[in-house]
Image (cartoon, rainbow, N blue to C red; front, side, top):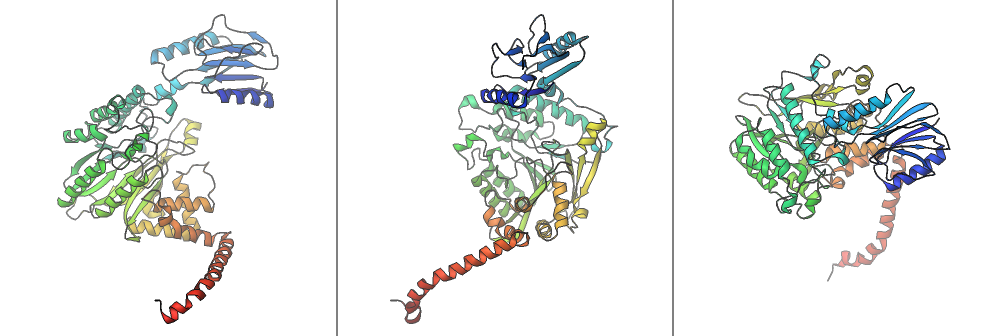
Length: 534
C-alpha cells in the first residue's frame, strides 16, 4: 500500500497539484491536513468536523471501518486492515483543548492495531517550545557559571510565521525571559529585538503609521520584561523604538539598536527608510557622549548592517557612524543569519584599512541544516588601560543528530578563533588578514566553512561562486555595495580557479579590442596633441 502524508495549508493550487501527484505516483491512501476543500463523491473522502483533517482513499479500495461520529481536528478509517488517523492540532488550541483532543484520539485508537497516526501537531509544538527543560546533568557545560553578562540578539519565536499571533509571541517572550532568568540567575542579560518578535513577522510600524497599527503592544511588553536587567532610564527609548543604552561598568557601555528599521521586509519603511524613529540620530548622541566621557562602547543588534536584508540608505548612514566613532566602538554583535561568521567595516576614505569588526553569532536554532550553537567571548576586562576589545572567542555546538538519536544533548567546543585561525589578535586588521589567508590557503577556507555551518554533517559543497559569496559577505559591513568592496577579491578567486584561464583570455581579448577601437579616435586627436587645441 502506497501512503502519502501532506499539509495543504488551505491552498487551492497545492490541492490541484496533489491530485496529479496521487495519479502519477499511484497513491492508495493520502493523509491530509488543512485541505483547501473537501471532495464530494465519487471520491472516498473522510474528513473531520471542521475541514482540517482528511483521509483520501484511491483506486476503489474499500473502507472497512469508520467512526460512528465525526470529531473536530481528526478523522480515522480502517483501510486494508490498517487503522489510519489524520490529525491537525492548530496552534490556537489552548492547553486544555489540546489535552481534550489527545484524549479523544486515545479513546478512538484504543484496541485498534495496526495503527498509523499522522498529521500536524502544531499546538504541541507551540506549547512545548517555551517551556524550560532543565536537565543540567545532560548538558552541564551549556550552563556555565563564570559568565559576567549575556548578550541576547533576538528572534525568540519559532520561524513558523504563518502560525504566529500577537498573543502567542508575547507568551513566548515571557516564557523565554523566565527561562533565561532561571538558567542564569543573577547574571545581567542585555537583549536586542529580532525581526520575528512582531506579528506579522517583519512588521514594525513607525510613529507616523496609523494608530490602529501601533507596535506599542510589543514594545511596552519588552520594556516590562527587560526592566529586570535594565535601568529605569532605558524605558522611554525601549517604548519608543526598542533601543537603549546602558553603562555596565565605569567607562564601558552597551548600546542595543533595533535593526528592524533597516529591514527591507518591513513595508512600513516605504514611507520613510532613512531614520524613521530617529534611532540613528539618538545613536550619534549616545556615541558622542561616550566619546566625551572616554567610554568604550559595544553595539548589539539583530540584523547585521551589511546583510542584504538591511536597506542601503540606513546601512550607509550606519557605516559612516561607525567610521566617525571607530575609537569609541570596540566591537559589534549581531545575529539573524544563524551562521557563525563576521563582518568587517573599512575606512570610507581608504578601503584598504579595516577599522571595525561585527561579530555574527551562531543561532541556538538549527534552522536550517545546522547544529545549535552559541559563542563565548573573552573581553579585555576591568583594569586602568582596558581596551574593551574582544581578545578571543569560542564557538560551542550541539551534535543534533546524536542528540536526537540518543536523547542526550552534549555541547562541545567546536573551535577557539585565535588558535584555529592562527590569529595573533582580533583587531579589525587581523580579521582582514584572515580573509586574505582564506583566499590563499584552501584548507583555511575549508575550516572556516565547516565552522560557518557549525559542523553540520549535511552542509552543501562550496565551489568558487559559493566561496566568493561567503568571503565577500565578510568584507561587507555596508549592504548593497559589493562591487566596491569585493571586486578585487572576486577577481583573485577567478584567477586561481579552474575557469581562470577563460577569464584571462576574455580579459585579454577585451583589452586588445579596447586598444584597437581607440586607434581611430587617437589618430583623429593626434593633431591636437601635437599642435595644441584651439
